Length: 456
Image 1 (cartoon, rainbow, N blue to C red):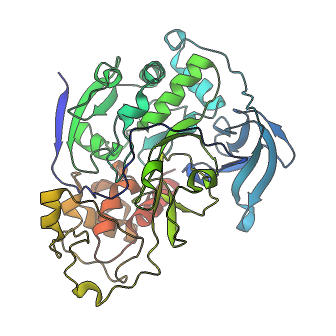
Image 2: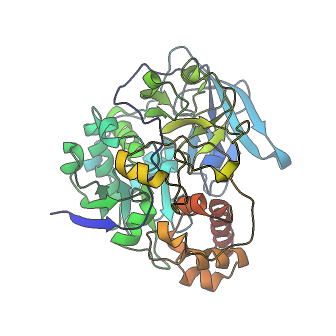
Image 3: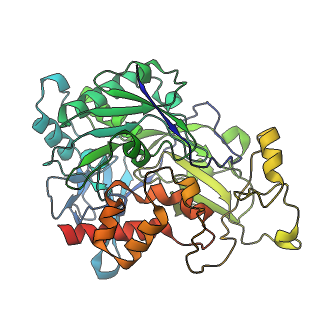
């Protein structure tokens, strides 16, 4: 019988624009971009130059400090740009795709007959190990380490989240193979978290894992929240986390012997036309302009996000799908929105966490969906100790005091207050409800990076 965990704190933001359970045509692209900044803790060095020909699965970056970890091209084609910023920092590599993708052949492998080291070596060589993250520090894991446990969240809980059970249809064998590979390289257990009402047989009857049922509001789907409630990370311990779609990629690699970075991406948001709110097969790094063409409202005051509205990356109309994202979201920018008498209006159509507006009554009765734009709605000010973060932060950690310790970079307090368990995404809801408009995810990321440099 699966262990059941009830998440009592959190917040579901019921936005307009959820995806329909319909899969549409593949979204192809002429150009594909690979961004080293997607892989936190990765110090990139280019393995290609302009004019080089690559196969899907050929390395384009490797880590200066850990050369065995590589980032590979998602498609075959020609390298048309190696873009750099200040101090020659690598920004991205752009590949002009062939009309027919050719894959680098790694060979099919039976995970059951492989040693843990050979599995990790194969994943690192194929560039897939870069999708395995570690706690503490929320960085790309080191294949030379052996984690205490590995955690996989089998569902998403973010606003307008993709339905992983729908994504999993047809990928059951690859998902199980991915779990088998993770079970071989884990020093302990592989924990798979699912919703209590899970219907997918691939999730319900997954082998080689410890099943945990997690119920509650967002951020119930966050790996950090699950780790905190299942088996917290202590100083000196290392655990790994893997997104569920990346488990499929791992399984696909061993079953087919190629690096196929195709994902089923949901196209969501209030500004997406209703018939276009669906799932689209896309390869990581693909440009979104073909996806949004004719599928959004006519307004030019829109924000395009690779990922969800809480943790995603703002991208331009011709931007690309980033490495760890499973949805493209389009919402109003809000710069041209002018409200008569502003906040004094009754606000029946405004989302309110603090129940300032009567809309919360309407929401309770009708399950109202909201259209929320990207405006800040307030000015930055000093931190206000109002307990509002704690109300949406379901981990056994004091978020206000941890943030203060990070700002002061008090290492002892950071350790005592749980810095080793958290990732920036765990503070996304705190940032959303914050009266002070503090960039909490940036603060946490900066604190983790500084702590990693200090401790290593």
